[in-house]
Amino acid sequence: MRLLVIAPSDFAPLGMLRELAAEVELSVGTEAGALREAARGAEAVVIAPRFGNVLVELWDDLAQVRWIHTLAAGVEFLPFELLQRSRVVVTNSRGLYADGLAEFAIAAMLWFAKDLRRLLRNQEAARWEPFTVERVEGKTVGIIGYGGIGRAVGRRAAALGMHVLGVGRQQEFGEPTLDEVIPQADYLVMSTPLTLRTRGLMSRERIGLMQESAVFINVGRGQTVDQEALVEALTHHRIRGAALDVYESEPLEPGHPLWGLDNVLLSPHSADRTSDSHARAMQFFLDNLRRFMAGDSLENVVDTTEQY
Image 1 (cartoon, one colour):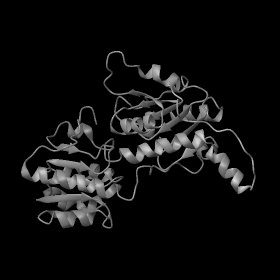
Image 2 (cartoon, helix red, strand yellow):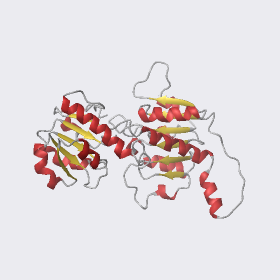
Image 3 (cartoon, helix red, strand yellow):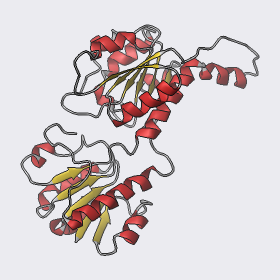
Image 4 (tube, one colour):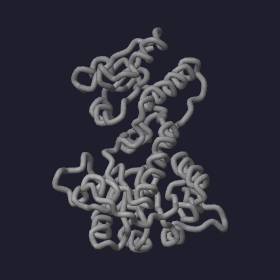
Protein backbone atom coordinates (compact mmCIF):
# COMPACT_ATOMS: atom_id res chain seq x y z
CA MET A 1 0.00 0.00 0.00
CA ARG A 2 1.22 3.51 -0.81
CA LEU A 3 0.73 6.20 1.82
CA LEU A 4 1.43 9.89 1.26
CA VAL A 5 2.50 11.62 4.48
CA ILE A 6 2.27 15.40 4.39
CA ALA A 7 4.54 16.22 7.31
CA PRO A 8 8.08 17.49 7.98
CA SER A 9 10.73 14.78 7.79
CA ASP A 10 11.62 15.43 11.43
CA PHE A 11 8.00 15.12 12.65
CA ALA A 12 8.58 12.98 15.76
CA PRO A 13 5.61 10.55 15.41
CA LEU A 14 6.90 9.41 12.02
CA GLY A 15 9.03 6.91 13.92
CA MET A 16 5.85 5.23 15.16
CA LEU A 17 4.51 5.11 11.63
CA ARG A 18 7.67 3.58 10.17
CA GLU A 19 7.89 1.01 12.97
CA LEU A 20 4.28 -0.11 13.09
CA ALA A 21 3.42 0.14 9.41
CA ALA A 22 6.43 -1.55 7.89
CA GLU A 23 4.32 -3.04 5.09
CA VAL A 24 3.29 0.42 3.89
CA GLU A 25 5.29 2.36 1.29
CA LEU A 26 5.74 5.89 2.64
CA SER A 27 6.41 9.16 0.85
CA VAL A 28 7.04 12.04 3.27
CA GLY A 29 7.38 15.78 2.75
CA THR A 30 5.77 19.20 2.85
CA GLU A 31 6.59 20.53 -0.63
CA ALA A 32 3.93 19.84 -3.25
CA GLY A 33 6.44 19.75 -6.10
CA ALA A 34 8.55 17.07 -4.45
CA LEU A 35 5.48 14.98 -3.55
CA ARG A 36 3.64 15.17 -6.86
CA GLU A 37 4.94 11.92 -8.36
CA ALA A 38 4.25 9.97 -5.15
CA ALA A 39 0.79 11.53 -4.94
CA ARG A 40 -0.22 9.99 -8.25
CA GLY A 41 0.10 6.48 -6.84
CA ALA A 42 -1.02 7.08 -3.27
CA GLU A 43 -4.02 5.20 -1.91
CA ALA A 44 -4.24 7.19 1.33
CA VAL A 45 -2.99 10.50 2.71
CA VAL A 46 -2.21 11.52 6.29
CA ILE A 47 -1.66 15.21 7.05
CA ALA A 48 0.23 16.68 10.01
CA PRO A 49 -1.29 19.74 11.72
CA ARG A 50 -0.88 23.02 9.81
CA PHE A 51 0.06 21.47 6.45
CA GLY A 52 -3.39 21.19 4.88
CA ASN A 53 -2.55 23.66 2.12
CA VAL A 54 -0.23 21.07 0.54
CA LEU A 55 -3.16 18.68 0.08
CA VAL A 56 -5.05 21.34 -1.87
CA GLU A 57 -2.04 21.89 -4.13
CA LEU A 58 -1.81 18.14 -4.83
CA TRP A 59 -5.52 17.48 -5.31
CA ASP A 60 -5.41 16.93 -9.07
CA ASP A 61 -2.66 14.33 -8.64
CA LEU A 62 -4.51 12.26 -6.02
CA ALA A 63 -6.62 10.25 -8.46
CA GLN A 64 -6.00 6.92 -6.67
CA VAL A 65 -6.65 8.15 -3.14
CA ARG A 66 -9.52 6.53 -1.23
CA TRP A 67 -8.88 7.89 2.26
CA ILE A 68 -7.57 11.15 3.74
CA HIS A 69 -6.80 11.50 7.45
CA THR A 70 -5.81 14.68 9.26
CA LEU A 71 -3.85 14.42 12.51
CA ALA A 72 -5.50 17.68 13.54
CA ALA A 73 -9.09 17.88 14.70
CA GLY A 74 -9.95 20.85 12.50
CA VAL A 75 -10.81 20.16 8.87
CA GLU A 76 -11.76 23.61 7.61
CA PHE A 77 -8.74 23.65 5.26
CA LEU A 78 -10.00 20.68 3.23
CA PRO A 79 -11.36 21.25 -0.31
CA PHE A 80 -14.91 20.20 0.54
CA GLU A 81 -16.35 21.29 -2.79
CA LEU A 82 -14.06 18.70 -4.40
CA LEU A 83 -14.49 16.05 -1.72
CA GLN A 84 -18.26 16.17 -2.08
CA ARG A 85 -17.89 15.14 -5.72
CA SER A 86 -15.52 12.29 -4.92
CA ARG A 87 -15.70 8.96 -3.09
CA VAL A 88 -12.79 9.78 -0.80
CA VAL A 89 -13.42 9.04 2.89
CA VAL A 90 -12.11 11.69 5.27
CA THR A 91 -11.31 11.12 8.95
CA ASN A 92 -9.86 13.40 11.60
CA SER A 93 -8.55 13.42 15.16
CA ARG A 94 -11.51 15.00 16.91
CA GLY A 95 -11.74 14.15 20.58
CA LEU A 96 -8.03 13.48 21.04
CA TYR A 97 -7.23 17.03 22.13
CA ALA A 98 -10.30 17.58 24.29
CA ASP A 99 -8.67 17.04 27.69
CA GLY A 100 -5.81 19.47 27.05
CA LEU A 101 -8.14 22.18 25.78
CA ALA A 102 -10.52 21.65 28.68
CA GLU A 103 -7.68 22.09 31.16
CA PHE A 104 -6.72 25.34 29.43
CA ALA A 105 -10.32 26.58 29.71
CA ILE A 106 -10.37 25.83 33.44
CA ALA A 107 -6.96 27.46 33.88
CA ALA A 108 -8.31 30.58 32.15
CA MET A 109 -11.29 30.72 34.51
CA LEU A 110 -8.97 30.51 37.50
CA TRP A 111 -6.63 33.12 35.96
CA PHE A 112 -9.45 35.66 36.11
CA ALA A 113 -11.12 34.46 39.32
CA LYS A 114 -7.84 34.65 41.28
CA ASP A 115 -6.53 37.68 39.32
CA LEU A 116 -3.23 35.98 38.62
CA ARG A 117 -2.05 38.84 36.40
CA ARG A 118 -2.27 41.13 39.42
CA LEU A 119 -0.29 38.64 41.49
CA LEU A 120 2.46 38.61 38.85
CA ARG A 121 2.56 42.42 38.67
CA ASN A 122 2.82 42.70 42.44
CA GLN A 123 5.47 40.00 42.64
CA GLU A 124 7.60 41.72 39.99
CA ALA A 125 7.24 45.00 41.90
CA ALA A 126 7.89 43.34 45.31
CA ARG A 127 4.56 44.83 46.39
CA TRP A 128 2.65 43.30 49.34
CA GLU A 129 -0.98 44.08 48.51
CA PRO A 130 -3.67 41.72 49.82
CA PHE A 131 -6.88 41.73 47.79
CA THR A 132 -10.16 39.83 47.48
CA VAL A 133 -10.44 36.97 44.99
CA GLU A 134 -13.42 35.02 43.66
CA ARG A 135 -14.48 31.40 43.85
CA VAL A 136 -15.52 29.68 40.63
CA GLU A 137 -17.81 27.44 42.67
CA GLY A 138 -21.38 28.51 42.06
CA LYS A 139 -20.53 30.42 38.88
CA THR A 140 -22.16 29.55 35.56
CA VAL A 141 -20.14 28.37 32.58
CA GLY A 142 -21.86 28.49 29.20
CA ILE A 143 -20.34 26.17 26.61
CA ILE A 144 -21.00 26.83 22.93
CA GLY A 145 -20.24 23.61 21.09
CA TYR A 146 -21.09 20.75 23.42
CA GLY A 147 -19.15 18.02 21.67
CA GLY A 148 -16.01 16.28 22.87
CA ILE A 149 -14.19 19.45 23.96
CA GLY A 150 -17.28 21.09 25.40
CA ARG A 151 -18.19 18.05 27.48
CA ALA A 152 -14.61 17.77 28.74
CA VAL A 153 -14.84 21.38 29.91
CA GLY A 154 -18.26 20.69 31.44
CA ARG A 155 -17.04 17.70 33.47
CA ARG A 156 -14.19 19.69 34.98
CA ALA A 157 -16.34 22.74 35.63
CA ALA A 158 -18.98 20.59 37.36
CA ALA A 159 -16.28 19.04 39.55
CA LEU A 160 -15.43 22.56 40.71
CA GLY A 161 -19.05 23.16 41.68
CA MET A 162 -19.92 25.28 38.68
CA HIS A 163 -23.29 25.32 36.94
CA VAL A 164 -22.90 24.10 33.35
CA LEU A 165 -25.06 25.19 30.41
CA GLY A 166 -24.15 23.52 27.13
CA VAL A 167 -25.35 24.38 23.63
CA GLY A 168 -24.83 21.70 20.98
CA ARG A 169 -25.62 21.32 17.30
CA GLN A 170 -28.83 19.45 18.07
CA GLN A 171 -31.00 21.23 20.59
CA GLU A 172 -33.31 19.03 22.62
CA PHE A 173 -36.77 20.21 23.66
CA GLY A 174 -36.61 22.37 26.77
CA GLU A 175 -32.87 23.05 26.52
CA PRO A 176 -31.76 26.72 26.56
CA THR A 177 -30.89 28.31 23.25
CA LEU A 178 -27.58 29.98 22.50
CA ASP A 179 -29.04 33.44 23.00
CA GLU A 180 -30.49 32.34 26.35
CA VAL A 181 -27.21 30.86 27.59
CA ILE A 182 -24.95 33.81 26.75
CA PRO A 183 -26.50 36.33 29.22
CA GLN A 184 -26.41 33.75 32.04
CA ALA A 185 -22.74 32.83 31.69
CA ASP A 186 -20.02 34.10 34.01
CA TYR A 187 -17.57 32.25 31.78
CA LEU A 188 -18.50 31.64 28.14
CA VAL A 189 -16.46 28.92 26.41
CA MET A 190 -16.42 28.65 22.62
CA SER A 191 -15.46 25.14 21.50
CA THR A 192 -17.13 24.77 18.13
CA PRO A 193 -15.36 23.64 14.95
CA LEU A 194 -15.36 26.00 11.98
CA THR A 195 -18.17 25.09 9.59
CA LEU A 196 -20.59 26.96 7.36
CA ARG A 197 -22.99 27.12 10.30
CA THR A 198 -20.51 28.32 12.92
CA ARG A 199 -18.55 30.94 10.97
CA GLY A 200 -19.24 34.24 12.74
CA LEU A 201 -21.55 32.50 15.23
CA MET A 202 -20.38 34.71 18.09
CA SER A 203 -21.48 37.91 16.38
CA ARG A 204 -21.33 41.51 17.55
CA GLU A 205 -24.93 41.20 18.71
CA ARG A 206 -24.19 38.08 20.73
CA ILE A 207 -21.09 39.59 22.30
CA GLY A 208 -23.43 42.40 23.34
CA LEU A 209 -25.55 39.86 25.24
CA MET A 210 -22.70 39.00 27.61
CA GLN A 211 -22.63 40.22 31.18
CA GLU A 212 -20.19 43.04 31.93
CA SER A 213 -18.52 40.72 34.47
CA ALA A 214 -18.25 37.78 32.05
CA VAL A 215 -15.10 36.22 30.59
CA PHE A 216 -14.99 34.87 27.03
CA ILE A 217 -12.80 31.81 26.34
CA ASN A 218 -12.19 30.49 22.81
CA VAL A 219 -10.57 27.07 22.26
CA GLY A 220 -12.42 26.34 19.01
CA ARG A 221 -11.66 28.43 15.93
CA GLY A 222 -11.04 32.17 15.66
CA GLN A 223 -13.32 32.65 12.65
CA THR A 224 -16.35 31.66 14.72
CA VAL A 225 -16.09 35.04 16.47
CA ASP A 226 -16.42 38.64 15.31
CA GLN A 227 -12.92 39.50 16.52
CA GLU A 228 -13.26 43.24 15.86
CA ALA A 229 -16.38 43.36 18.04
CA LEU A 230 -14.64 41.31 20.73
CA VAL A 231 -11.67 43.71 20.80
CA GLU A 232 -14.06 46.66 21.14
CA ALA A 233 -15.90 45.00 24.03
CA LEU A 234 -12.61 44.27 25.79
CA THR A 235 -11.15 47.72 25.15
CA HIS A 236 -14.20 49.49 26.55
CA HIS A 237 -14.63 46.95 29.37
CA ARG A 238 -18.08 45.92 28.24
CA ILE A 239 -16.97 42.43 29.27
CA ARG A 240 -14.46 41.52 31.95
CA GLY A 241 -11.91 39.72 29.83
CA ALA A 242 -11.03 36.98 27.37
CA ALA A 243 -8.71 34.00 27.10
CA LEU A 244 -7.94 33.08 23.50
CA ASP A 245 -6.07 30.17 21.96
CA VAL A 246 -7.32 30.85 18.40
CA TYR A 247 -7.65 33.95 16.25
CA GLU A 248 -9.27 35.21 13.07
CA SER A 249 -5.85 35.20 11.40
CA GLU A 250 -2.80 33.31 12.66
CA PRO A 251 -0.19 34.02 13.75
CA LEU A 252 -1.50 37.11 15.49
CA GLU A 253 0.34 40.04 13.88
CA PRO A 254 2.70 42.05 16.15
CA GLY A 255 0.67 45.26 15.98
CA HIS A 256 -2.68 43.69 16.76
CA PRO A 257 -4.58 45.50 19.58
CA LEU A 258 -5.10 42.24 21.48
CA TRP A 259 -1.41 42.27 22.45
CA GLY A 260 -1.84 45.50 24.39
CA LEU A 261 -4.91 44.60 26.45
CA ASP A 262 -4.30 43.68 30.09
CA ASN A 263 -7.68 41.94 30.40
CA VAL A 264 -6.74 39.28 27.83
CA LEU A 265 -4.84 36.00 28.19
CA LEU A 266 -3.30 34.98 24.85
CA SER A 267 -2.13 31.50 23.84
CA PRO A 268 -0.45 30.91 20.44
CA HIS A 269 -2.84 28.14 19.32
CA SER A 270 -1.00 25.62 21.44
CA ALA A 271 -3.31 24.97 24.38
CA ASP A 272 -3.74 21.37 23.23
CA ARG A 273 -0.05 20.77 22.45
CA THR A 274 0.96 18.46 25.27
CA SER A 275 4.08 16.33 25.26
CA ASP A 276 2.13 13.33 23.99
CA SER A 277 -0.53 14.96 21.79
CA HIS A 278 1.12 14.21 18.44
CA ALA A 279 1.93 10.64 19.49
CA ARG A 280 -1.68 10.06 20.52
CA ALA A 281 -2.90 11.43 17.19
CA MET A 282 -0.51 9.16 15.31
CA GLN A 283 -1.62 6.12 17.32
CA PHE A 284 -5.23 6.85 16.44
CA PHE A 285 -4.25 7.07 12.77
CA LEU A 286 -2.39 3.75 12.97
CA ASP A 287 -5.47 2.09 14.47
CA ASN A 288 -7.53 3.50 11.60
CA LEU A 289 -4.86 2.40 9.11
CA ARG A 290 -5.26 -1.20 10.26
CA ARG A 291 -9.01 -0.89 9.77
CA PHE A 292 -8.50 0.57 6.30
CA MET A 293 -6.14 -2.21 5.22
CA ALA A 294 -8.54 -4.83 6.58
CA GLY A 295 -11.50 -3.28 4.77
CA ASP A 296 -13.25 -2.33 8.02
CA SER A 297 -15.19 0.84 8.81
CA LEU A 298 -13.08 3.81 9.88
CA GLU A 299 -13.57 5.89 13.03
CA ASN A 300 -14.06 9.67 13.13
CA VAL A 301 -15.46 9.90 9.61
CA VAL A 302 -16.03 13.52 8.58
CA ASP A 303 -19.35 14.53 7.04
CA THR A 304 -18.20 16.42 3.95
CA THR A 305 -21.60 18.11 3.63
CA GLU A 306 -21.62 19.39 7.22
CA GLN A 307 -17.84 19.88 6.98
CA TYR A 308 -17.23 18.26 10.34
